[in-house]
Amino acid sequence: MSKATNKAVKIIRKMILDGEFAPGSHLKEEELAEVCGVSRTPVRDALRALAGEDYVRIIPNHGTFVSEWSGQDIAEIFLLRSMLEAYGARLAAEKATEEHIDTMRKEVERIDKMLSSGKGVDLDIFLAGNKKFHETLREAAGSDRLTKIITRLIAQPVVARTAMSYDRDDLQRSNEHHAELVEAISAKDGEWAHSVMTSHILAAFQVYKRHYSPDQLNTSD
Amino acid sequence: MSKATNKAVKIIRKMILDGEFAPGSHLKEEELAEVCGVSRTPVRDALRALAGEDYVRIIPNHGTFVSEWSGQDIAEIFLLRSMLEAYGARLAAEKATEEHIDTMRKEVERIDKMLSSGKGVDLDIFLAGNKKFHETLREAAGSDRLTKIITRLIAQPVVARTAMSYDRDDLQRSNEHHAELVEAISAKDGEWAHSVMTSHILAAFQVYKRHYSPDQLNTSD
DNA sequence: AATTAATATTTTGTATACAATAATCCGGTG
DNA sequence: CACCGGATTATTGTATACAAAATATTAATT
Image (cartoon, rainbow over all chains, first blue to last red; front, side, top):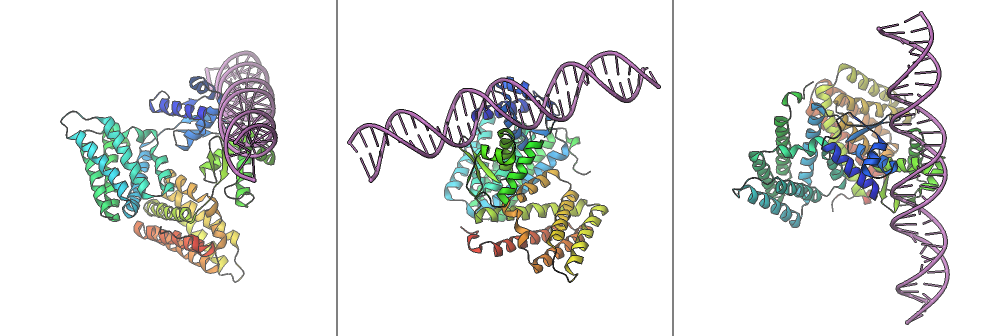
């Protein structure tokens, strides 16, 4: 993505994440252009890109609106994620190199050290380590297409803020899952890795449900 | 998508599908603008959209190039499709209405009639019926997000032409799978539907491999 | 003849101007 | 007072012009 477009994407994405635009609200190109300090052309590019990430939806001749997320939507996303990431974990178990495994193990240890240090939790360390762990696992799975699909799914506003609501026990369990994943992958046990990853994502869903208005999240319709 | 952009997308997509641009070749915006009879602006929009469908890939400041597909890529796509469509079939078994089931059954019957008519095969009838069947099944699954992901996966050049290479037996088996899917879904048996759909897609992969240079399609690396 | 540097050309990226479409406002009419 | 129709404004869509970057070409040097 080119310079001005990239700048616009980052600014607009951040503004949506920060809640500066309410869900459903109409984003005007000229306004955004002014805010971003670029012309309408790269702003339009940026909006197309953000539509690809499901941050906004574009209605031809009417404009672009920031996406609204129902409980149903969020449930769908977590379920799909659990399936796709679990598949990735199975592939990783079959194909990971020693290097991949080392990298993942190191991230587990770093987070573990932080959690057992006695001091308060450092969310930044967790977030960075968590990101690196999952990225490495996806890389180990060796399917660019799968990575792309997953990345698109999780690059969404709702999921982007999930991790913020983890309490200490959640972080602990999350990292135990990571440790078990490393073990399963080392053992080249695809089925094991698959099932741990499924638990890992569904547990995250549970945290989400606990934190954000649980009553809205009825998956049965 | 707006008028001129839509026009450009259709024209460029068709040209790629028809092989008028070799894989890897550099698409120049001005040329395309002339061919499509629009200006560069909607052409650029169109190229972004086609990049989303993986018809082309865009390298910033260098241009857009028509995608090249390795056997590995194609294998990935079919495997992902089998997983996602199978998941959709499971959901459909849980949630399909009588109306959905009727529609699917009707499409099965239409194709069956065509196949057993004694006349030669009418591929158009098969393609239309097949499309309708799968669309209905996805609708029955009731997950817009899943539908979107699958649609993106199969809207790709390689997969877009697969059905063309079906022989009579392939069509027969394909329709038998459809019939069995209707049965499984009627019985609300998600596991059954899941497994039939998996077979259905993997069989399609097999046809693909048989038809397009089988030696390139070694999935083991 | 091969290599490099400088220059010219091509191509993409961005800004702006104009056209088409949709949304808003306002006055008239039942 | 509600409702419809037309004019006005706002907003998106498209074309063009210009800037920046990359590629190709040429000339000079060894």
